[in-house]
Length: 199
Ligand SMILES: N[C@@H](CCC(=O)N[C@@H](CS)C(=O)NCC(=O)O)C(=O)O
Image (cartoon, rainbow, N blue to C red; front, side):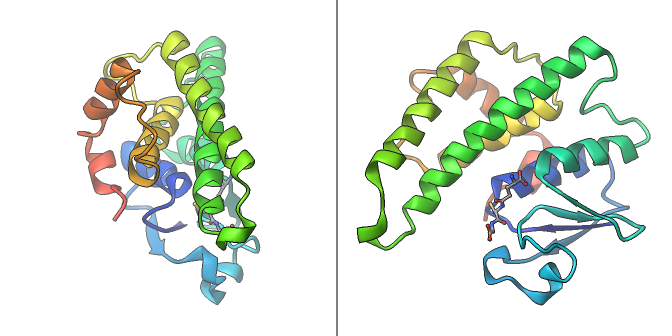
């Protein structure tokens, strides 16, 4: 299998963390690439030119980080990123989806900041930043962060919080959410998170 990624993408980081957590490193070749330049190596197999993109051993393409996590989980002998038990699976999927939205809002904010100044839309950025703040409060009030667990929802959440620290350090989320900050510090010590730190 080949996993196309770039080092700063929070979406690609989810997939890279999952490969390591699932012990699939021997089966996956990591291909570092800049999707923004639409390189032939990527677009020849992944038409959207986005990372992550997973090329399976049979040549089939899998896109979208959440789908890639599910596929990787199904390929691992002891896959457990999404438990089979229905209630736990629902909970994991729901947490992963909300955290994907948190990454989306952060990513939109970053990309907006890269537009030429006259084309930036400050109301749009403020809307995303309000969504980020509300999502963090919601998560703090409602997510059980179970020590030792690091499932699909947790991977998405860790990559979301780490991306905030990396790209939007002016958003001071740690002080109002010490429980979340402590959790991120704890899971950041996992080998999968250390190996995938943004460059
Ligand atoms: N919803 C997708 C988002 C993937 C995505 O937007 N990746 C960015 C990098 S952070 C990308 O490759 N952008 C290149 C482009 O849009 O041309 C996922 O979860 O995998």
